[in-house]
Length: 292
Length: 291
Image (cartoon, rainbow over all chains, first blue to last red; front, side, top):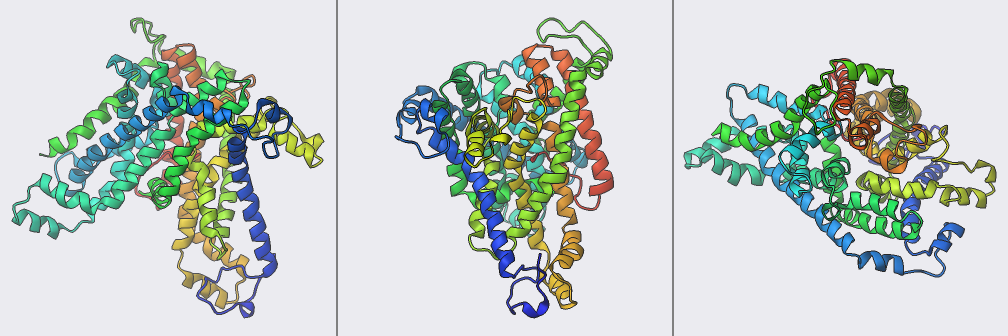
C-alpha cells in the first residue's frame, strides 16, 4: 500500500489519517462496493425470488424473473395468516414497549435521584440480569409462564421481554437521570412539585432521547424475537411473523418462490422502520451495547 | 414513595427473570418431564450425563469455533470497514446505512433466505457455475465438514455491521490533533494507524470483543432455522442442544441443567474478561447484543 507523505497532502481540515493516493482510493471504493453487493444480493434474491415461478427458481435463480410472476405476493397478501401474524407481532412489540418504558424509567428515576437503604443492592440485582439473556433462562421461564397461564397470550411474550429488557434500560437511563441538575429539582419542589410530578413533567420530557433509545431497542428486538414466542405461542392464531416465516417455509418446502414472497413481506416492516428511524436505530442499538 | 416507584420493575423482574433462574437451578437436580410432580431427585446426575454426552461436547466445540472465527475474522473485517468508512468517501452515509441493515433483519429471515441461497444447485452454486467455478460448488449446509463455516459466514453477514458501527463511533472520538501530530512528526498512514489509532481504539475493540464472545456462546435462532443443528449434529450449539432436549424431548430437568452449564460458562467468561480486560473501560455493565 502506498504511504502518502506529508508533502503530498492537501492542507484541508481532513484528518491526517486520510488515505489520499488515487490508486488506494479506487481500491477502497472497490472493497466498499464488493461488501455492498454482498449485502444487497441476498435481499434482492429474496425480493426477486418472490416474483419467480418455481420452475424459474430452480432453473435460473440468478437473472431477472422472466416473465414476472405476481401470484406469490398476491397470494400471501390475500392470506389472512400474514396479516394476523403482522398484527400479533405489532401488538407484542407495542405491549413490550408500553411496559418497559414506565417500569424502567420509574425505577431508574428513584435509583438515580434518591438515596435509600438497599439502593445499590437493588441496582446490582438489576445489572445482574445483563448476564441472563432469554436463551439461558428459557426452559424454566416456560414453566413459569405455563404456571401463570400466559401460554398463547401476547402478554406471555411481552411481559418476559419487558422484564429481560429492564437491566439494559435501567443501566442506560440511570446516568442520564443523574445528570439532570439538582437545582432543577429544588426549584420544582419550591413550586410545590412532588416526586411524581417532577418525574412526569420534568424528567420524562428532558429524557426524550434516552426514552426513544429504549423504545427502539425494545421494538426491534421484540419484532425479531424468535425463541420466546416459539415456546410460548403454540396456537397458530397467536403466532408472530418470525414463527410464521419458519412454519411457512417448512410447510411449503417445495414452493420456494412463495416462501421467499412471504419472507420478503415479513422483512418489509422492519426495513421501513429502519429507513424512517435510521439514526435513532443505529445510535440506539449501538449505544445500548456500549453504555456502561 | 420509593417502593411504589420501584414496584412495577421489581415485580416483573423478579417474576420473569430471577424466579425462573433460581427455579432452573432447582430443576437441574431432577429427572423431570415438566408435568409430573417434581420427585425424581438425581443430584448431579444430569450434569454427569451432559459432560458424558459427546453431542454436547461437540456443541461446545462448535460454539468455540464460531467464537474464535468471530474474533479472528469478523472483528478485523468490521474494523477494516470502519476505517474505510472513516475516510472521506462519496456515499459514505449510504454505505454505513446499508452495512448496518442486516443487523435489523431478524435472524429468522436471514436464515430462511440464506438457506435458499446455499441449497444444492441454488443461487450460490449456479453463480459459481456461471463464472467457471464448477469445481467449487459444495453442499454448503448438508456437508458436516462445511456447515459450521457456512453458518459462520452468515453470522458475519448479519453482525459485522453492528461491530463496524461501534468501532466507527470509537474512531470518530479520537481527536484529529493526535493524528495530525503524528503526521507532522513524519509518521505515514500505516504507522499512524498502528501507533496512534489502534491503541486509542482499544476500549472500543475490547467492548466489541466482549459482545462477540457472549453472542457466540448464546447463538441459537440462526442455526435452529437454517440447519436445525444438523446434519448429524455438525452445527449444534449449546443452545440448540438445550432447546432440543427441553422442548422436543420434554426433558425439562435435563435441559435446565444444560442451561445452568451455559450460564456458568458465560458467567465465568464474562467475569474473567471484565476482571482482566475490561476493568478500565466500562463501569460494570455486561450486555448481550451481538454475536
